[in-house]
Each structure stands twice: as C-alpha cells, then as structure tokens.
Amino acid sequence: MTTIDTRFHGPITISDQDIITLDWEILGFPRERRYILLPHRADSPFLYLQSVDRPDLAFICIDPLVRVRDYHIPSEDIPRDLGPTEEWAVLCLCTIQDAQHGTINLRSPLVINRVSRRGGQFVLSVPYPIHYPLFSEEPSHAGSRP
Image (cartoon, rainbow, N blue to C red; front, side, top):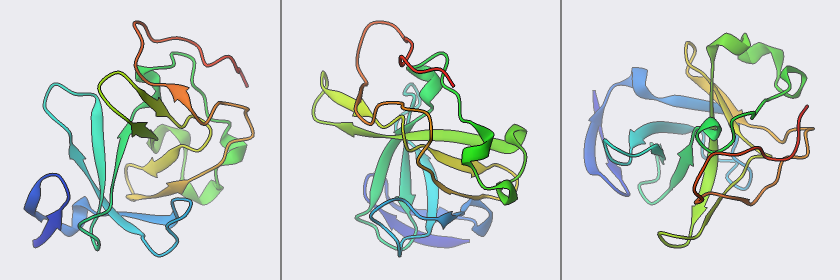
C-alpha cells in the first residue's frame, strides 16, 4: 500500500494492483505513465484518471458509450499486445468548461487492458470528432461508423 496525493481527492492509499501503466502515453504527456482511476461521485458517469507521480495531473474521462451508443474501436487501430478486445476498458478524455459546456474526445480514446492494467491513448482511423458535445439530452450517434 502506498499513499499518494491527488488533485480532487487529497491524499489516498492505493495498492500497486490499482496502478494502470500507460505503455502508450497520453498525447502531450510522454513522461507520465502511471495512473489510477478514481470516481468523480457515486452517482456520476465521470472518472478521474489521476497520475500517481504528479498530484496536479488528473484527467476527466467517461465511457464513450454513455454519450455515443454506436461507438466502436477498430481492433486494427490498437496494438495486438494489448490483449483481446474482451479485456479492454475504453475511456475518452473530456474537457469541461462549466455545467452546460463540455466536449469528449472520441477520436483518441484510452484503451486499458483490465487484466494486465496496461494501456494507452490511441488515435483512431475512424473519423470520430475530437470535440463531440458532452452535455445534451440523449445519447446519440457520432456520425461515423467503421
């Protein structure tokens, strides 16, 4: 067990088994490789992807299926050594300006193997938008089908 400082939850104790290693980094953050997932709130679909090594670095993310019913990742866009698709957890990074304005990056999802706890951010060949509206009445289609 290790205690780390976090941006939104303060100091917390984590197990080494909770750590996700991003062998393929988040674009723009090549040195940050170790993260944990933390809940936003119990009733929220959002998660924080918190850096283990930098308390100030946390990304807001969400399962893309919450917003886009037909979201799909072409398996050929993800390295084979990340394991079978059945073991993948898929999250997309969000940018939130306020309670009514935000976007989700559907083009560059995080794919994490739930078993090995390895993953990364990948740019898809499918032309999903980078700034898809996050807040609207109903989940919809992103306009691109592989």
